[in-house]
Length: 348
Image (tube, rainbow, N blue to C red; front, side, top):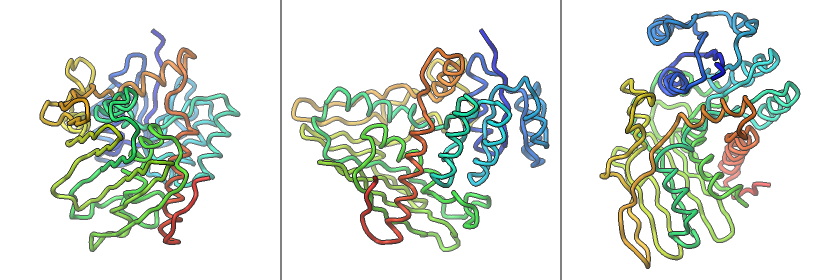
């Protein structure tokens, strides 16, 4: 099997927990270089990947002809700059979500990738979360009939402000709408496509918070309302997904188990039960035809990287296209416009 060499740009918690362990579990990828200047992250990089070279100068990656792929896991406002340099150095690029703070920056990167004929994709890994895979299958099978209402939550309880760029107002792309909202929006667009109209309410609920830490986003379609919500002061969580159709409903509690596993240092490689949810959090289907628990599909974050590998070799179409990721940023921009103007805004 052909080996593709990977360079990680950034090795904070996002890269260390959600990217590197998955990449290293996918056959055909080798993490060769890691760019970080933080002493704690340098130590972690050397400990997790002793075979990789840890560097503090980006040029060491850009000028290395053996590096095939650059994974951009830096603060959001740096995505455009880091990815641009990688594409200009003829590297394939995987960007941590969200794509960029603006649609304009996303379009510039898409054009550059096309010019250099390189793969440009996003780590929208929640497409391979067990609950979302289950819902995709359920809707494809028309178990609920025609969907009239869909509500998804990505809630947390974090009453203390976490020091870092995600909580800093001066950094474009900060706040929960970009962070957790990117996942919810991407899932909605995959299931239902672009909406006709958008309405958003964005809030700062914690006293010391400087950026949006709660949002409610409504996407309007003919005959369908999609509600996406996230907050940082949700101690007792309700359903993660509530779906209502002409034949009945589906309620799903709990969270995809892959994130918790990654936080404890587990990896998909050699893990026969990876991504499998316990029965306690399986969703409940209640329709005019049946009432039952629906066994969750096994989650598979690694599928994203497996697809990138095959796409680079020309054997598969890219599953997370940058054009799709750009639409996520467009929804975020329109959500901010809607909130500012206090009105429904058209998507087109």
